[in-house]
Image (cartoon, rainbow, N blue to C red; front, side, top):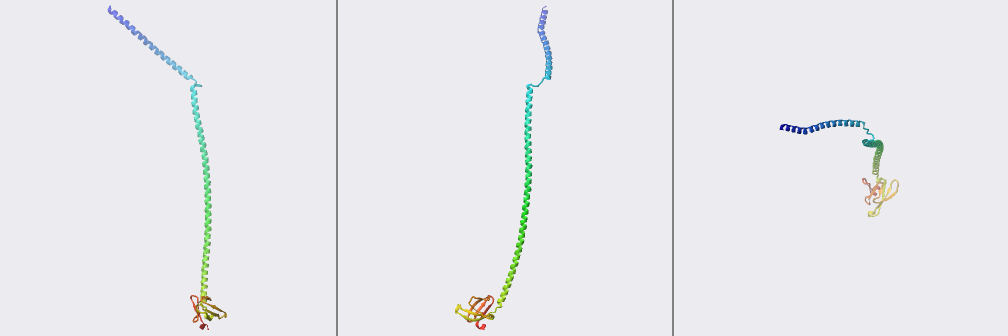
Length: 237
């Protein structure tokens, strides 16, 4: 009897403890299933909401539009900068072509100036060469004239010398008298052809001869440096 009471008490305790846990386990299982159903419904609703969502006029759309406008403005700014660079490059290209044309013109002008200067120098060189030829011809002519003049002078001198050498005072003159004293002696001579007389003294020149001395003994001595002749009273008679 006592054992039966103990078994019944144990069974009752077991029921009190186990039954609520089982019930709770059953409730948990039920809640999990419900939660899964709710999640599935929420996902379906979210998908439908996303599919049916219209972004026009929304804040997100405004932000997106602003970002796009900002990007477009940056692109337009870069495009305008590129256009400016292209215009600058085109202007520099035109300027470069103009400078090339100007340099080509200057080079052609300088070339023409050099050719003109060269032609001028060649003309001056030809002129100087012609003047040199004329000067050489004049020099040769002058030298020829000088040589001829010297030859003529030499011939004349030789002729004069021969003529002088051919003078004979004894045949051309006669000593008339000697007057004076000491170094002041003077002589009177007479030209045999004309009969004219002349008084001579030392240093006087007669027919290219110079009176070298006068004395009573030797009479008058004439000399031209190469030839010496004496004219005295005894010889002149």
